[in-house]
View 1 (cartoon, rainbow, N blue to C red):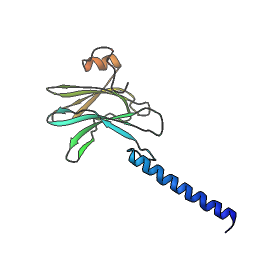
View 2 (view 1 turned 90 degrees about the vertical axis):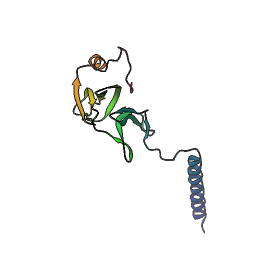
View 3 (view 1 turned 180 degrees about the vertical axis):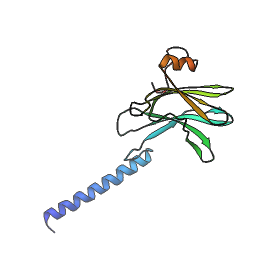
View 4 (view 1 turned 30 degrees about the vertical axis):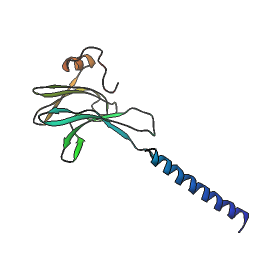
Length: 154
């Protein structure tokens, strides 16, 4: 074998050992070499005997805003629940749970065709209705939150 072939073979062996050891270390530490989006589900609230919760998702690969979603419990665990407000959701407020259901506030991102602030009403039967609000003070007034209350995503 030539010196070049021996050098390439040694390099390939060293790289293979390096990546195997890095993968084992990442696995032991509970991570991965190639991170995927991470999500956190907030404590649930109940409407009509069904659990709902906020879920926030971020990406470790690229710095940027997180996205929010509302999830609903079902037979196969927590699944996304569509209230009728287009994604991406940048910030959320609430919930305000009451006898007639729950109210939540959502700010849609500029990429959505309906960017702005929305209030969604979740009824005890699981249906949802939405309306657009003019500004944050109207949203906080609808949710009966004190002025200066920060959103979940802010």
